[in-house]
Length: 635
Image 1 (spheres, rainbow, N blue to C red):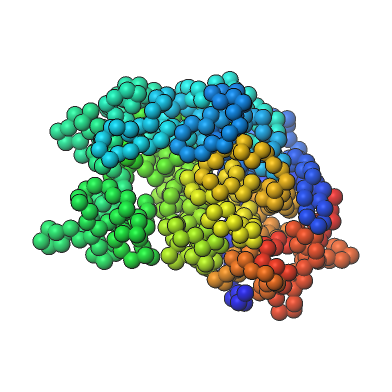
Image 2: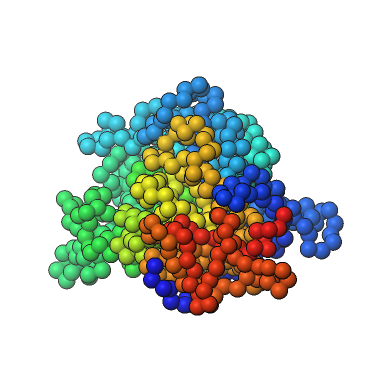
């Protein structure tokens, strides 16, 4: 690789957030030097910094429980994870696609040891609430050319807040799952949706009267309803609006007109509206919105919430996602009932954290109230934008704080193009095979001060909505290893999607198809990544982007200059050795206290050496994690 120029230092706070101060931890890891296969991990032992009463220690332990800073998470979808009991008991046939597969809470509980075997701290579970029970696909025969939009197996179409979906199991079975997870020292991050309900139409079971607790039209946004009745406003199964959409020109981006009143589909040359004239500029045509025929040059073809200069927050907040009933957060009853529901979820199920869907489509002050209500439980929000400043509004907006954490979409949109050449991301045109752009985004997150806690930014290489990483990286082992190493050693919360550990290549494929194999290279590698993080107590270390080139990225994680870790990643995926440039030359910390000290590659157990001018040669294109020999040799 080409030598990396010295990088400006970029650091994050070494405190885990406002909930508590970080305590020392002891982790004991037994490894085989040839493969660093972890055969055992002891739980962390939290030690009070000062002598204190039992009540104080209990409070400190509880606060640590709810602080998600630096914790690793395994994302699973109940319907696709494991069939035990339920509607398809005993059926082990592979299941994919838009129908119910009938995984259950009991099925998840049965495989907790499989998840814990990879060393994860938490499980993120997609929504568990009751979805529409109708067993026909919404949209079938409901309009010319509409087609169907699938079943509600994923959980994101809430029908009744206070019931679990019967396909998954009962409330008591979910409680048993949570208790068992806690017994395995796994925290539970529960996914919820407060922006919208299930598809909303005049006919049963989609009619508003069946939705609990929001069973009246007044609880839903009705932007641009004009003289239409509610039934007319919600009648369309496709070809929206109506209802008014939050993704059309005038919402994410304003559709400009020239002096003669004619639409300017270039928006004055910035092309941010992504639209060119279709049969009607008011009709959502996805092919002209983000496809090959979208307006604008490639580098700004994909315009997202937070990326547009003329974004209209009112339309974003009050417009709908297609036909999903969009809740009106200016209505006191809606806010009151949602705050009440969040309190009930935490009390009823003893969950540890919340993941919140579609965050930027709700008012910021409402989000602040939601987080305050959930405290000390942290809410990890989904803001699908590549704009770091707008993304950070999810933690802090103006003079008030919003949510506790965020999925890290600004880096996700750059990482898969940079490491694997992914052509389908919003930032692909400029980020493809370019680790420098990823490094710049991470520096901005670390240096700008716009976040309240970078350690609760959830890093990932795919998710429940995106192509599996094995496909994105074309099953290239070294590139998959590099992007996973970046996920696990960047500041924040590393997250892996179910099936990654099996080399899954189909979106939302049933996990039972893989027979819980714990010998795949992916399972072993993820176990190694979690083990190294715990061995060096990485979770809330400070971070420096130590160097980057188009095809290499070097991270430095450290605490008080005494405990340092260096992570070397690349996108090359080629045979033969690879040379990195690291300046200033890394010096092994606390060397004077040791008879002999040196850097060790934590994946191989081999000593690593730098030349006097900072060159480091890796034997291949696999990622390298260098830790002090003092840590490697410690019990």
